[in-house]
Length: 88
Image (cartoon, rainbow, N blue to C red; front, side):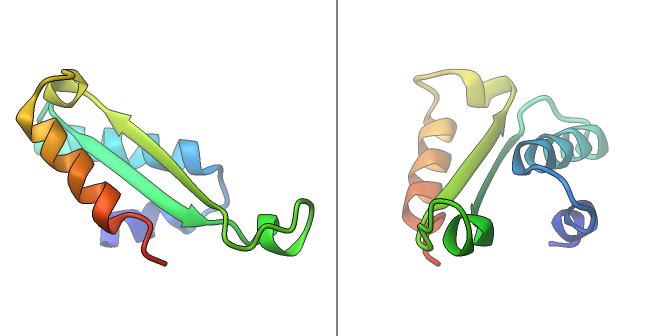
């Protein structure tokens, strides 16, 4: 939580935030197998422009084993984020 909070303090695009968190974790943990998924509501979509207040954007950054399509760890991760990732 502190890592996400630290990177999210400055204004930026969600795609950049996802990649920064991924790269930081990979470096700090000295690990090639890292998966980061961020789902967020964007108030600009709800209050301005297209006026879709329930729209949620999800960005992912995967490396290592998480890039292998038949990997059980990847499948478990994808299942977990599909169940828990969009419950706003």
